[in-house]
Amino acid sequence: EAGVTQFPSHSVIEKGQTVTLRCDPISGHDNLYWYRRVMGKEIKFLLHFVKESKQDESGMPNNRFLAERTGGTYSTLKVQPAELEDSGVYFCASSLLAGASSTDTQYFGPGTRLTVL
Amino acid sequence: LAKTTQPISMDSYEGQEVNITCSHNNIATNDYITWYQQFPSQGPRFIIQGYKTKVTNEVASLFIPADRKSSTLSLPRVSLSDTAVYYCLVGAFNQAGTALIFGKGTTLSVSS
Image (cartoon, rainbow over all chains, first blue to last red; front, top):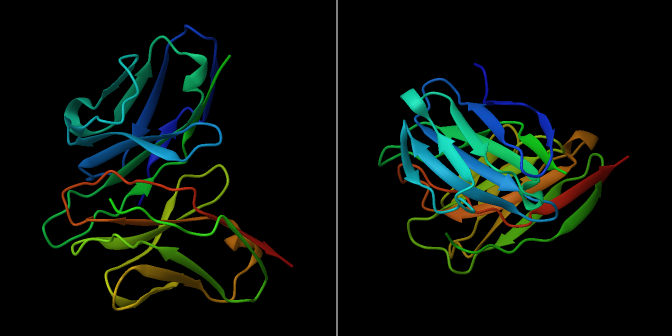
């Protein structure tokens, strides 16, 4: 079974440019999450999709970040315009839609390292 | 999600058993305890999850005392490849999707 994949693995852009990160979850997983780790900090939650709907976007830092999951399959995270403080590693994770008796084991992708110069 | 406290780092030699303890004094009744492992340049990987007593899988064991205010991840006979950061997370993961809250984790360094 293929795991969570992310593209690109590394992106280097200049301040003010736009970057789009992509995440392909495990097939059949309704839950999709985005997380971010900036240099020297903990991994922080950004947002959570259930299928194509945003369930929780409380972790999104500001309106320069836009996440989409059209069709409930892959997701994109666009940063426009990118700022220096956006540099970090962006992780995507997916999980099955948990029922009342199950627990939400999240499977993470390898991450996209974003460097804003 | 309940706040957790765990050692910043630990060192071990190959072949030893490593126990990493996590404190979670404010754990709620419906909270589970979950451990993730992260290697450099990779995303976190689920290791084990439990609610009470002891859970064992092919990778590790998780010991949870009766009061559930702490838990211990036990890695039997570690090897160099077990060098990673280990995160203890506590939360009601039986909901339909839960944002994970990561702390600093415990950096385990295994040497020969």
